[in-house]
Length: 508
View 1 (cartoon, helix red, strand yellow):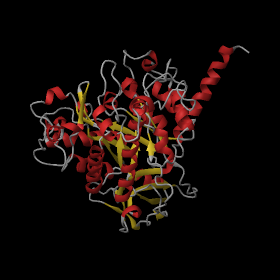
View 2 (cartoon, rainbow, N blue to C red; view 1 turned 90 degrees about the vertical axis):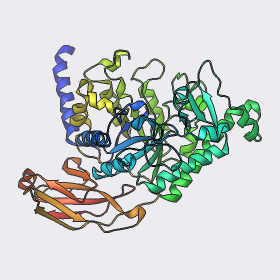
View 3 (cartoon, rainbow, N blue to C red; view 1 turned 90 degrees about the horizontal axis):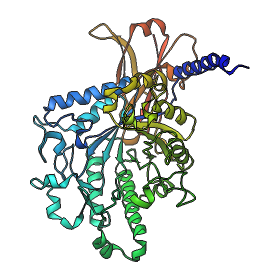
View 4 (cartoon, rainbow, N blue to C red; view 1 turned 120 degrees about the vertical axis):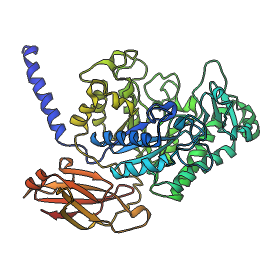
């Protein structure tokens, strides 16, 4: 058979598969984006914006990701030892208004504002913190430093251009726990999220000088076992934070986004078939597997920013390893969408059709243990390289999808909605509305799925093509075309850990 003659047939099959895929999305899938505030990467776009301009930028970002059927925002609220919220411990961030400890004027709380706006759209809000980075480019802040660096200088280590908390000091871990406690108690967040900065990445020409804390707090560890001591320090804070968060609000998730490689196989038979220059275990002293085995984290989100076929760290080998080693923990994959179309990156990132991101998402779908994707970072969707927004919306995220269940050992089933009805609003648009039965904590209904079915259609609630809304509001506008072509609407209440209540049907 002439292979060239088979090409049109193969293309026809591929296009058919794409159409089939476009008809349905997974019933549950985590679809997130990192919004970075350090260096004003994503928000605010400038340190000279008014409060209203800052709010408008947030609204525009959330509206964009809602249109793309994303369901989670991972927002950096503490890029170092500063705050994008009203903290009782740390100063307002320089990246907010161009000065350390300068509150928004007119005053508003950015964290409270974006949480409320995300929840209106049915999105989870994950509060992203850096646990140990204290000051970025500390030389620039000598005239207006973080006060604690003068009050407790023994807590800090200068390394490279940054100033870090010393993870080996017990009081530092207590302080970090207090920061997290303050946030969990005072804000309606869905998760605390840490990225890959525990001990800092190693620099070739500098030593992270924690000899003093090792001498004081090293206990029974010998100098040749200092790396084990460092790992134990990080284990301690992860364990303590897990217990603290769950003790305060059991529904608040604790998620970690580590560097993509735990260990190379040449150093450990349990490691991945990679040759990464640095790894979590050996260089950042973060033993991710240990945390998952102990159920200290609700999800793991490795930063797999390489391309498929990378010479030393290939994307496919990285995610296959995590899929095989997730220990029942929710597993999401971090994509380096910022590399797309960048001529300084390998050619894989400059291919327009299909793009590297499309290839990665296709691969993710073939692995049953992968529960979703997160993209770094938000501004990549504003530039929309290679029209990637439409590709995601039309091929991969066609329909809304509910976030995965958390706290799998405990099921928190919310009450079904009540008093559901269809009416007309002031603009003579059809409005579906309902009431919520108030409940405490984990059982509270916090968002809702709305389905539309035609007459005689089977009410299959796993068909995402039937979802017309994922919302945190208690009302949804129903387009007239849906009224004309539908027979019934179904509302499902969703609890804080993403369990479903019983369906409520409203007939047209």
